Length: 281
Ligand code: SF4
Ligand code: MG
Image (cartoon, rainbow, N blue to C red; front, side, top):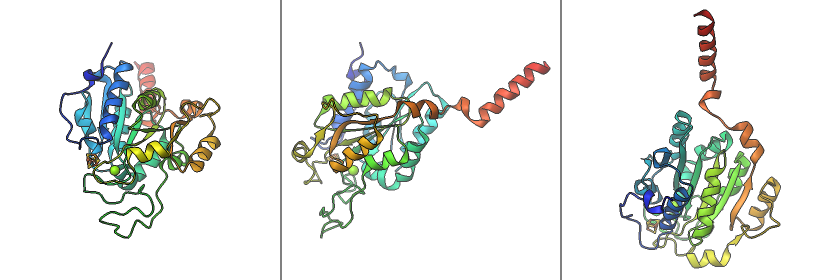
């Protein structure tokens, strides 16, 4: 039986003590251990930011990419070797600002990878300025009067772009988070897991206590049906996105849309060429 430590390379994270990203890292290690994913078949790709360091702490084939580009790298790895379990990970600034275009197109494309965003509603590495998901009125050094913009809604964005799996978790609820990551990896298509992962150093508004008070969960709600697209959209709107659990999973679309190298025109040409070669020789 694999243990979470088997998926740690022993390097001590440099995150501030209490950063939500510790819980995400441990949850990913526990999930991959419980699923007994061979480390040789596990690839973890990250972007830039505090959370981007996560790939450097996993004992797997890891790739610390460039800002906002974890998803293209992860999709390329999966297309090159579809036997790998591929995890892309990063922060809200990385994924919803510079990487936003990649995010919606990865959701639309539905390649079988898992994308974990450690969402702390701020840029931590560059010392605490607003990100695309910061609350309206949020005061930072870059917005001393309070942010004027309304925050993006990553869950709604992913669903409207065609994501076939959406879950939301919280660093303070590690047991639920492990379960969500396992379900995301099991899903055969693009799975998006938006994790509320507090930045204890720069975001004094969206704290662990704040999330415990404001989050609801569908994980224990037997009446909640994650196969309903409208239900998921409605739940996100009615809670203003402050909800954890598996919000949406579309089993049908994933089967139709799952892509592999074997289905690309280039690969088909190869097969046709092979058939022709066999006939001639
Ligand atoms: Fe975590 Fe914030 Fe510290 Fe970065 S600055 S390591 S996000 S607590
Ligand atoms: Mg951030």
